[in-house]
View 1: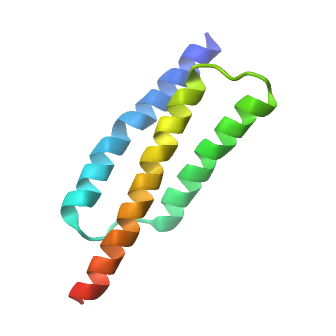
View 2: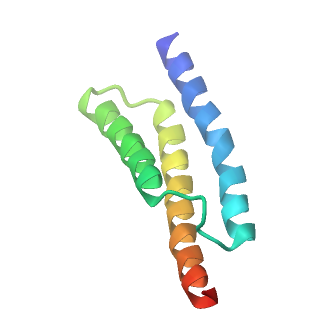
Length: 90
């Protein structure tokens, strides 16, 4: 049961990332985004993956951690793109 609850937590978080990515892509601005927040979220997913491997409890939940971390990395990339666009438009 704990694995199912953990998977549901990660899936719930993961549902929000596609909309955040789309908003970042369409808005073409970094205003309202926090790079520190994104980096901390990414680190959190990395720590979760590392904990799974260190605790020998690698299971299907790791896939969701990895998918979410890739989406956060994409959002970080868009942050840098949008920051450059903000500087160009200023």
